[in-house]
Image (tube, rainbow, N blue to C red; front, side, top):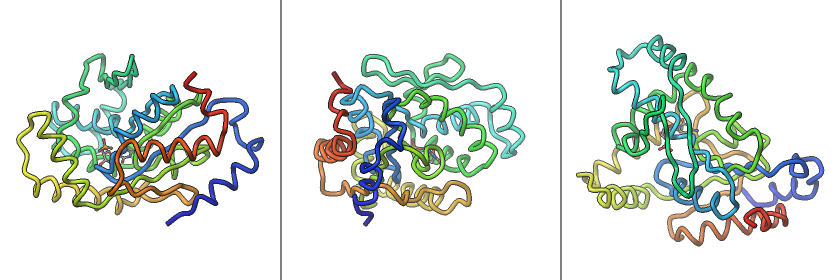
Length: 249
Ligand code: DC
């Protein structure tokens, strides 16, 4: 377990960080189904920060590939990178994903798209394309960035890093309930198998694998409620930067 001491190293020298000039970047990495999305949205809204859902970017590409029929070549991905414009909107508590102006927010949330997103996210060309896109979205600070490589690759200088984990069984159960609520026909064992497969894909890929950033605060959410996790994160952020409580005002 990574101790909070590491983050306190930075707290002791805030003048070295960009804190003084702009609002911080908070990163939340972790495996699928650990509660990152729910928690990141709540934290972002509490701090009045932008919620940067980087998984949605990979899902948007997966969605487009699926619609157009992917022949498995990188050439097709390069074509789409050139043509496709993806944007994320935070509007009055609504988080929308637009692909060339089309609202795909719901369509990208299926297990099929999740698995395809995980598969294509191992392709260096796509990751290279999305690197500046993500950084630009966080350039002014005041962002909660959620993904797999936020604290390790995309925002290594982020002021505050979290790694949110949970057991596979708990993650599968949560995802199952979430999908059932949305009316999607799902089987718990299938969800767990998909999660195990995605975990393997995300952790074992050679480029930007899912990993715990060395200076992250690790939180295991298996036995914690959403609000407990948000409280823990808020406490860490306020300790790191006491003025954080004023962000939301
Ligand atoms: O968080 P998510 O389930 O929406 O992400 C979908 C897939 O996208 C995930 O399995 C791996 C990939 N991904 C990634 O490689 N890097 C990120 N920063 C975010 C997501």
